[in-house]
Image 1 (cartoon, rainbow, N blue to C red):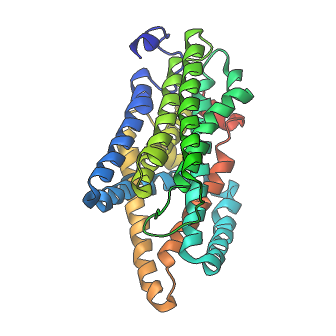
Image 2: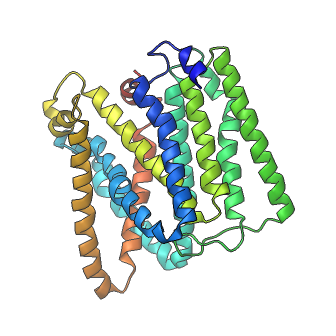
Image 3: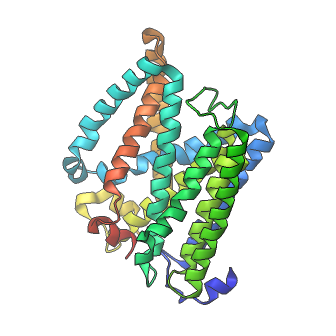
Length: 347
């Protein structure tokens, strides 16, 4: 690892700084994996760790979306559909999905859509690092994309075919696969992971990709292997990929905002541009964590009071609607092929 990094120009392949990028690429996945393994080996701490993750990272990462679409009048005017219409449509969809299939259907939609959402975000971050390489076109090659996506796909297959599993205490729609086939898929996953990492390291050796991309690719593989395969309790495994995804998203959004407003405070985007100025990261994080506590705390109180009168599991319905709205909006506002996004992440 040190040899790979030593070959680099100090600014080659990084998004922010060598120190912060290495912390993001190596420290973050290791932290997420350690949290997951700790909970898996100490089930009595599961609720505590999940709660801390939600309040410190999960809710914060959802609200980070609004730093793009709704933190000021200019952004709200430009994103009226996302802010006012889409939430209603998603809520209606979630409500009828619950009426149709109950907890099992909702757990299934959440589990599978979240996997897709996480995988797409991972590809986006990987491309951001890949675009800092000399031959970034290699990332769109069908062979490279096959190896990148095969790890998440095969990991998911092994997870949802594992018998007698519950996700957050609820059943979900899984599939039966004979043990022989599960073993075949497991061996195939291991081979694809090793060959894929070998290909990336070879590309680094010949300077087609940077070492920072290799670090990301290896972390991507490890997270899916741990979250969906090695940790056999789905909820504990979910914790690894959820923490990784949440902090990853918070980091990228802050990178985008800090680059966008690096020239100074913008009166049209007064609050977010002020918070995104250099040396204000602690204040930026404090504001978003505080907003998360206030927003979700008040929402919990409101939901608790309404749930009694309606007899519906409103907490599940509302939180699912918020998450699914977040998935849809993110799929539209963070496309790296858009210049307005690319120039503030891969500058």
